[in-house]
Image (tube, rainbow, N blue to C red; front, side, top):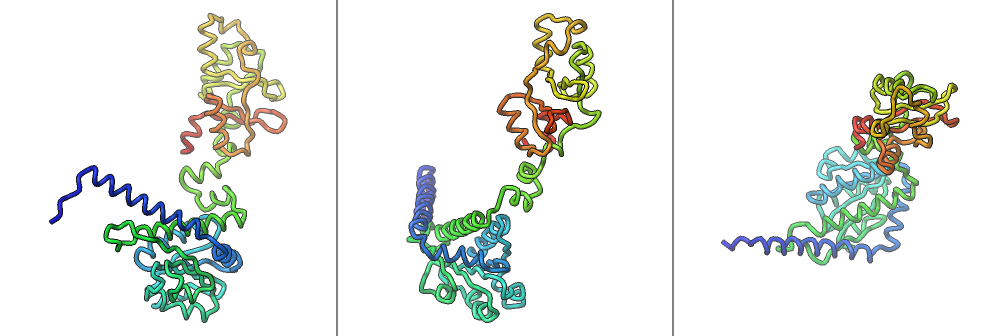
Length: 327
């Protein structure tokens, strides 16, 4: 039984794997040509969906490629090639495109279904490492992902070849994304859960305090009355507004500490004299993620929400965004 590699040998082996796989992807870049353009056009022109299929390790990669396509504007799903021969071919229509993946290009389960797919009128795009294979010759368009060597020391287990396939799938998905004019908002609609969806969908209006929950006083009141409003509303600040609701400034917990350090009398000091007149505001229809960016960039904890006429309609602080999972 061979000796186990020592730590230095393990690190050297891992680096060699990464080097081999990096070279495999770099080779793909230099190999891109009109076939890639044709593959993009094929995907864009079909009225139906992209049905991705592959067996074994290629099947796992196919699943990921289908998921990436679907989440970036190209309707797609995975079909297991073995199940396809037992009824799942009914998933494909003449309006669809079959994206068939196999490094050898001769995978029996995949090759078996190609004539049926062609007869029904669906288009065929193949990704293989052999341009002379059955799958390559049968396809309307073929993408070559041949690698010089696998990262496996035995040159047997799919490693560099699956990495290259995955990278080609990503390249295709991103090219199609750009071609379709797919936006961040489009992406969010297919990822509504979790912090990603919230960052791309949640608006300030969804998280702000409104109505009686917004702390606000007029500029003529004393600092004491301003502090009572802050305490009552529990937001760590109060807006200062005119009788018509125009925003004139803001007073925060941080301002209070500075005022107390100066020895000011909270009963005699007007809140107008200690407020920040040029305070940051934001509109209600702006993404909540933009509000977070403003807070972090300016190192502040609260924002007033204003309408187009600079009238106070809401307020939020960094804790509101934290509760929504944006941080």
